[in-house]
Image (cartoon, rainbow, N blue to C red; front, side):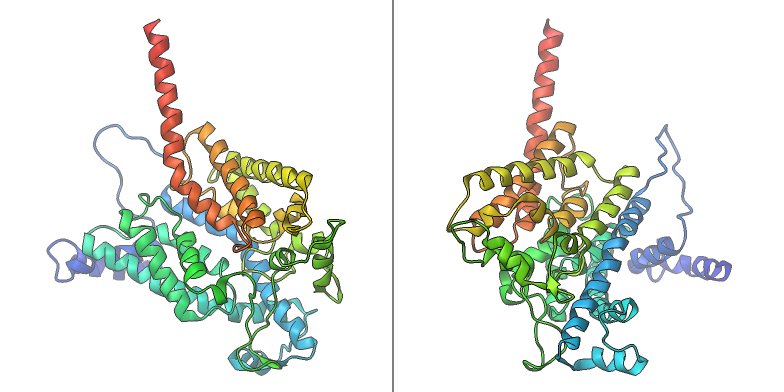
Length: 421
């Protein structure tokens, strides 16, 4: 490390003010601070020191994401290997690599599933960071400021909320849209009013619904019997498309129609994450492990999470009480809503983003409850969108400043009235 430190210090004059490569200083600074702790210290008047800086905050979120990443990689490979075991012939470069290293396509082999899933995840991950990171550096050089660590978490979130077989050109396009329109247009890290990862996902959701609507998360690329992937409706889409019956139990039939290890899918299967879905969203258990870390470290607000669960539970209970013989989603209980789709992932990693969420304590409860209520309403009432979490969070991102403004104004008015007395 000393050799690398000496090398960076030797090249520093070229990039500092007055140097030949001054324009590229943000790129140099980004590489330097990625490898080493910044050597600068605050000087001048009295200031507050805090052990939690932006870099440590971002790293904490990434560490909290690891359970969802690991389960997601296993599940993507598991779903693909299960299709191969059922008689679908493996084709494509992924199949060639797996065959070459001799792992095979056994869904009962965790290592084989993990490696197969990794071959889906890595290209998406690399494209996301190459495009998003490149845009961050370009904007930093143009605006003559340091490269912020804000995209670091966004770069992990975007691949986790996408289908594993999404075309890579769509990943690049969505990442560029999310970073430029969702963040840089508002002034960069800390200034954005929308979650950039969700902006990228929303762009794909509406621009290319065939690959991103949630109806099919693995798409055949060769033929009906030779695929480099696996085609199948998500559990949420199956329930949404179920034909209602008088007993109001059609959702149970739709769930049982999906097989896991040759048996009907159970709630525990969905909770653990062994069902089709976007890469990182299938395991509610992994999301809850990440939530525990974020809450203990104080990075994410437990108030938002609790309020989102409460809002979703109350809304679902009212819809269940009303019942329906024409819309089966109205009969789906909340414990199923929580484990299918992106409810748990959105609650832990998206709704709690400190930049776009409400700041006031009461505002966090209102903000979280609003997301939970709206997510369920979009899922149930609007047949065009089987998943409502993304839209609910983006809408409440827009409302968060207004919520805080009203609450702060009320506090100020109350204090003024108290002072007048």
